[in-house]
Image (cartoon, rainbow, N blue to C red; front, side, top):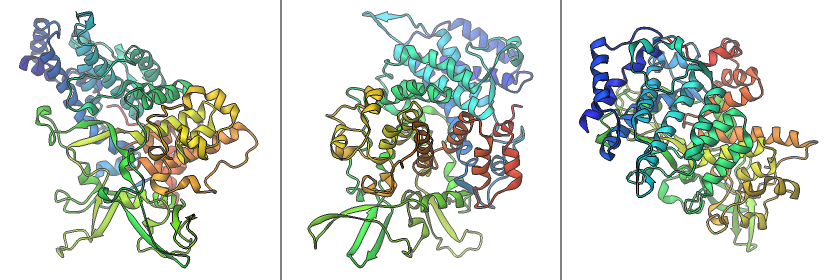
Length: 568
């Protein structure tokens, strides 16, 4: 078992030369010795060997975790850097990255890909016991890791060398030998590659089920990027509604949340006394995360350093390097919070919102409450001048043990995006405002008969598991009882295409509000810009992150090649 684990790590040196577009980093003697061992251990056909091989791949995924979040956050419109940010981070934010930037290390993507390719080429995929394929679940998991890694690789580099077999000879480590795949070509390949495993369970001996990427979610993502919106919607829907594994947004009431220490605001109005309202972060629980060494020593790998960038820590002398941008503040504060409450005078339910002229103790409490929950900025009590005046604690990213990659709310929002683009804007908007379930249809959810018939099973959910008390709109996670907000609607528009365009913008805004700090925003903007062939959209959004247009950055982002990192 130890031999297999050692071999797995020796082989990760092989892709370095491919990504470096030059000679192999390892010496010939290292390569030869590794290949001798490969020949001796021709197949992976033991459960223990497979376990260690999986651990080896997860350990290589650790190299990508922080970078996945950083590349999606630092390059978007919701995050701005402080003067304390490193040169490498500033290069990322300015889209002016060179080959020496620490975050421009494509070899790490190939390390995962090479290990997955080797694993899949050597595992005995046909071995059966009592008619069941022994390694089917592990093989499905590895196919998922490889597809996810290649998607991240393509999103960050635009066009990438495409290799699906292990590189075992030095002469084969020449990138010119392999085709260059675009984002769409990568997606189209892995859609077909993953389809055979759509109903395969993840390894059932894993104590941490969220270590494996659900194949249906991956297929949904690949189809979304490839423009196959009907298929994407089906994969997301079937994941959320899978019998026995249903995923309603939350099992908790929006008001029963004090145990989560939510962000809180109190406002006063002449018509009623103190009213307290909250943001419930429970809806953002994760479904795939990558374990870091601090949580599980078995992985023998890295700890996350995200907190040193997005929060005040001892490691950075309390000088956080990134925080929320003015563009994020403006988007959040432009939202409307709505509260329904029982009026003790009239004995009826009433609907209220904070008055526009309300003076807040902190302007981050205005509008959507998620921003004020995520970023906790408080005075630092130590008077030592070397420390920042303020201590910033980012509730989403402060962790060294687990880095979440997929959350339930992300899946719902991508499901809404796919539904909308497939031609079902009312159903997509219902995910934002109400939540799709039979109880909500009976109360206030409106989807006309024509769309209901066309959408069919895509908007049907198990009524035993999806109920009013655990199914509500994503927008309500930051804006309260949004189902009662008469201004949060699709207006009367001339055509269905107009409605789709309107809802598409609402979904994009909601992705910003709900998924900030999760490493997805830059890619959401990119997907929209590619879909509409609109470079100016992405350029304008990001160049205005600090409230005013950065003309140099705007001009740079008008050229699509500058969206991607340079391959060395």
